[in-house]
Amino acid sequence: MRFFKIIAVIVVLLVGAYAASMYYFVDESKEFTIEKEVDYPIEKVFNQFNNLQNFTRWNNFFTSSKTITIDYYTPYEGKGSSISYNDPKSSDGGEMFIRYENPNKTLRYQLFEDEDENPTLIDVKFKAISAEKTKITWYVHTPKLSVLSRAQNFWTEDKFAENIDKSMLNLKNVLGNKVEKDNLLAAIKYDSLMVEKEEEKMILGVNVSTSNKKDALYKNIVMNYNKINNFVTMDLGKKNDEVGYPVLITDADNFKDKEVSYFFGIPLSKKIGITDNNFSFRSVSPTENYVIYFKGSYAARVKAIQQLIQKAKKDEMRYGDVYQTFIEPPAEGQDVNMKLSLSVYR
Image 1 (cartoon, rainbow, N blue to C red):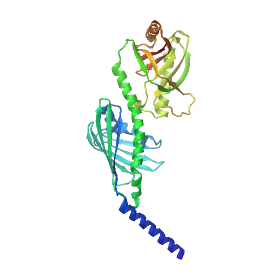
Image 2 (cartoon, rainbow, N blue to C red):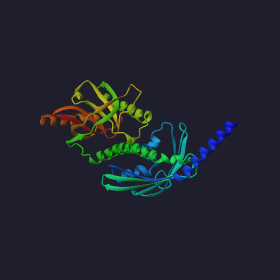
Image 3 (cartoon, helix red, strand yellow):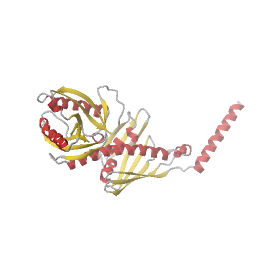
Image 4 (cartoon, rainbow, N blue to C red):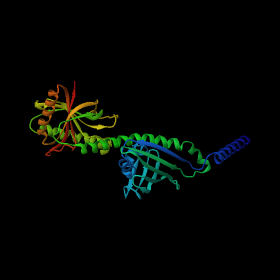
C-alpha cells in the first residue's frame, strides 16, 4: 500500500513538473511563417489555392491518404467556400473554410481539426516576382492549447513545413501539365513545319499490334485510348491537370505496312507502381523533333508524316520514331487534332 502511495506521489510530482514547464516555457499557441517560390504565373497559382477542389488534388495532407473522403460545399471557389473531410483509417477529420479573398493577392483559411472548437488561422499571400514566377508566403497561427497539450507545439511547425514541401512538388507537377497544355494550345500553327525540343517524358500505356486496313487502325487506337484513360483516371485516380496529352509512338515508315505496331499511352509526372500487367511505362529521352500540327481525318495524317520525313532527308538528318500527340482525345467517327513529331539526329 505504501509503495502505491509513493508511486502516486511521484506521478503527481512528474505531472506537476511537466505542467509547470509547459506553462512557463511553452507558448499556448504558435505563430510561424513559411515562404516558397514556384515558376508559374500568379493567376494560375492563385487558382490552385482559392478553388478547394483544385487545392485538395495537390495538397499532401489530402493526397497522401487513399482512404480520406472529402465533401465540397458551394460556392466551390473563393470566399465562403468550404470542405469537410474524414479519414476512417487515421481518425482524422475536420472542416476548412476560406474566410477572405483578395484575388491574386491574399487568402485566409480557417481550419478546424477533429472536434477542436478553436481553429488554425492560415493567411496565404501571393506576390508576382516576374511574369512566370510567384512567391507564396504562409502566415500560420495555431489555436491555444491547454497546458497538458502544449507539447504538440514542439513539432507543429516542422510538420506543417514538411507538408508544404511535399505539396509544392505536387503543385509543380499539376501546374507543369496544365501550363504545358495551355502553352501548346496557344502556339498551334497548323500545317507549318517547325523544329522543337521535347523534354523527357514518362508514359504509361500499352504495346499494340493491329491491322492497318481501312479504318481498323484508328478504331483500335480509340479502343486503347479508352482503356488507358479509364485505368489512369479511375484506377489511379489521376485528374485531367495531372496528366499530359495521350501519345502514340510508332516507326516513321510503318504507315505503309499491312500490320502496325505501336505504343500508346498517357504521360504522368513520375513512374509509380502498378499491378496490372496489361500496362507498362516507357521513358522517352529529350529529343529534337521536326513537328507539324495537323487537323483532319486520321488517314490523311500520312501526308504530314511524309513531309516530316522528306524534310529530314533533305537536311541529311537520320530519324527515329514518330510521336502522335492527340491534342483532342481520339473518338470514333471524328477528325483528329494532333501534333506529329519526328525525332531527328545526325
